[in-house]
Length: 139
Ligand code: FES
Image 1 (tube, rainbow, N blue to C red):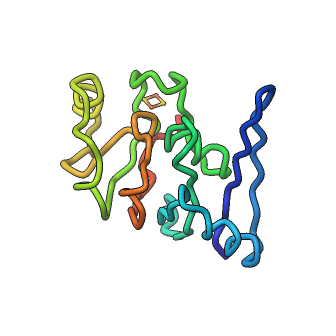
Image 2 (cartoon, rainbow, N blue to C red):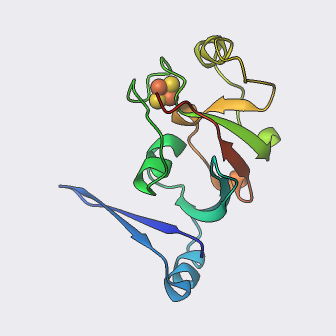
């Protein structure tokens, strides 16, 4: 069953909730600033994440909030590459990777032209339908 993540931002806090009900998924799909991203986990399991685009969270933060195993040792500074993902579909909808991101990807033996760092990906509405595969190291 697809996982859905709801992130509510108020002045004092950010609440993150994960839902599994189809009814709630349908409700979220009505939002203009909500896209669907297919996530392939390390074991090959595919889930559809509903990702809000009107908040300032990276894909790495969204994946961690959705209980995917991502180390993100550097906290999103593009210094550890443990948030490595392969963009299986939708790579053309992303902005170019920065030199720092490319330098870090160059250190990975399994990186290729479809590799990106999830911590450097801030998804927008035009990324709807993207498919990514989690590849980052777990140690
Ligand atoms: S979290 Fe360290 S490079 Fe992305």
